[in-house]
Image 1 (tube, protein in one colour):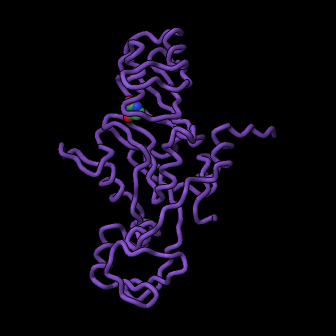
Image 2 (cartoon, helix red, strand yellow):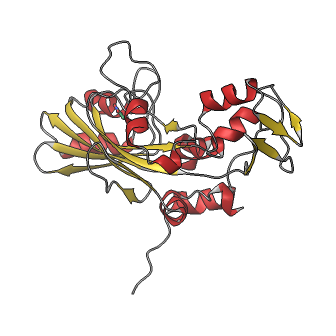
Image 3 (spheres, helix red, strand yellow):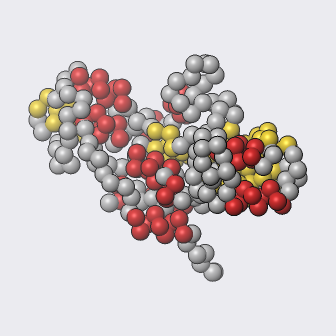
Length: 264
Ligand code: URA
C-alpha cells in the first residue's frame, strides 16, 4: 500500500513540539486531571478536604509541583497532566459560550448531559467557536495547550466547512476565495475552495476569525444559508448529530498533530 505523504501542518506541529507550559495550581490541576470538575474542586479545597504533602490546603490557587502528593477525601489522586479530546457533533441552536441570555442552550449544558461518568471529573474547554446556527465538529478538551495548538493560525491546522449558499458559485468566486479576501479588518490567508453540487462551497481554512466563512462568502456575493464544519486536521466528523465520543491518543496525534501530554 502507498503511504500518504504527511501534510505540512502536521510536520510543522510535530517539529514545534507544543507550546510553553504554564505553572499549575491546585484547583486547576484537579480538574485538568479529571479528579473533580472546577467548581467542585474549589469547594473541596475550601472545605479542607484536600491535602498537599500531608497538609490541608484551603487555597484554591496554591502552586503545585509535579512531585507533590495530593490527597482528596483521604484518597491519593494522580494530578499528572493528561490530554483528553472529545468530538461533539453540534446541532443548530446551541451557543458556544458559558452564558446564554436567550435561554436556548449552550454546548456545555449538552456536554454535561452527554459526557460518560468516567469523564465527568474534568474541566472541559471548547476548542474554538462555531456560530449558534452552525452545525458540525466542535472539540472539547481538558488541555489548554491543545486549544492553543488547534486554534493558533501558526499551526495551520485545516478546518473544513461546507456552506450552502444562495447565488451562483462561479469559478471566479472560488478563485477569489482561494487567493485571499479583503475584509473590513483583515485579509484572509490563502484557502482551499471547491464547489460541491450546485449550491455548496467547501472552504478549508487554517485560521478562524469571527464569522470568517460567512464574511468571506459574503464578500464574493454569496449569502450563507447553512454552515457545517465537517473536518479538522484529517479527522472527519464520525459522530451522529448531538452525540460525542472521545478521540484516542493515536487520533489526537495522527489526525490533529498534537502529542497528548500523558505520553510525555
Ligand atoms: N465561520 C463562520 O462564519 N461561522 C462559524 O460558525 C464558523 C466559521
